[in-house]
Amino acid sequence: MIDFSRIIPSPRITSRQKAIKQHQCVIIPQMHFVECTVNRFYESNSMIHRSVLVGSALLLATAALAASPIADRQAVMKSFGGATKPLAAMLKGEKPFSLDDVKKSLATYAEGNAKFVTLFPKGSEKGENTEASPKIWSDAAGFKAANEKFKTEVAAAQASIKDEASFKATIPALLKNCGACHESYRVKD
Image (cartoon, rainbow, N blue to C red):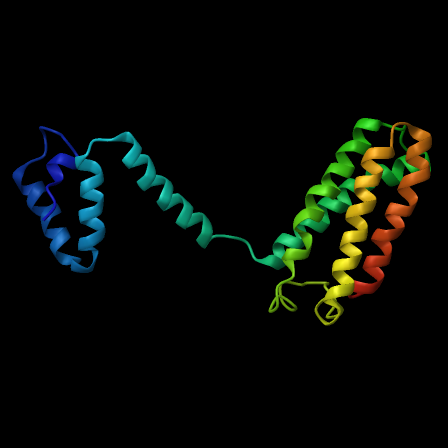
């Protein structure tokens, strides 16, 4: 049995409350190991042990609630769309050139691209209104090559864009590469 008086040190806990809490432990015998482990953490009176216990519980809860690969890749694509809007507006002259905005957009591309290919595991071909073409899985090498090309172009753009002239010389090819991937690896409505 667990001595709950050590877990909740309070002079107001009556013997009846202790009995109720001890009785609850008897009702769930399969939890004995977990209860004993929890009791040992609390008996040690160490904040580190308590933090480890709480952190582990939160980690397990987070892993259980993890999003699906389809939702994750859709989120990446939405971030790419949001990053593309200011670039397209600057190219069209609808928005004044801003090197800071360009850097933010390119950073979004680089961050999303780093994990993008991993978001297409087998079994995620259908569901959740995915627009991913089956060609992604049938031509996995081509898809990975297109992703690597985009990664290389983003890195080159990050290194070379210093002003509006270099922006206008670099970004159209980068956006064309985005469109080419959509043509090959996205199901059209």
